[in-house]
Structure formats: structure tokens, C-alpha cells
Image (tube, rainbow, N blue to C red):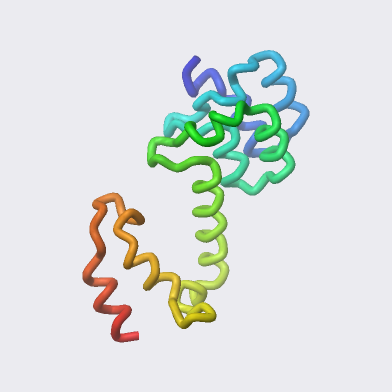
Length: 136
């Protein structure tokens, strides 16, 4: 099946319709671990990204443990990584100051991010950000 075949499942996950999701997965057991979007996201990725905790719990129970680790979207994110990213973006959209608010050790999140090359697709640190952060 292609992502197009999972359109109803995708819509149900986005809406938080647990009964439709259960019905779809009962009729299509492979759907629990299937890529349901053109960006290779599973129902678990989508549920985690939109914050439907009850759906996340149900999908985690139904999904084979190895799939929880192995299934990544086209950006290489597991469902957990996608959830963390979207929660962080949601927090920042509500309070931009969080990006530069120091933690208990005085480290600002944006500074910590700039020092982790793996956080960037190029795999390289952004010198511009480092220079800006040193002036903060």
C-alpha cells in the first residue's frame, strides 16, 4: 500500500478519532507500522507530532517493539524524536525567549544546539550562530 491508501487513517489520527483508528488497524493490521505519509511518517509519528497521547499509547501497545526503534521518517526521526521536536517548536512559538533563557548551568538552548553538528543536515556547526552566541 502507498501513503495514499492510508489517507483515512491519517485523517483519523490528526483528528484524534480513536475508534476509526482502531477499526482501520483491525481491518489492516500492517497499518500500525506502515508509512502513512509521503514523508515516511507512521501513524505513531503523526499522533506524537499533534500531541494525541491516548493514540500514541494505543499505537505503542500494538506496534512491535523493534518497529519503535527502526521506523524513521524521511528526515531520520523516530516517533520520539519527532514528538520532542514538535513540542520544542510549540514551546518556542509561545515563548521565543526560551531559546535564549539559560538553564541552571547558564547554558542557553540555542548555544547548546549550535555546538552539536548532528543537529544540522550539513553535519557542520554554524559559525555565525557561535559568534552571535559568544556575544550574548
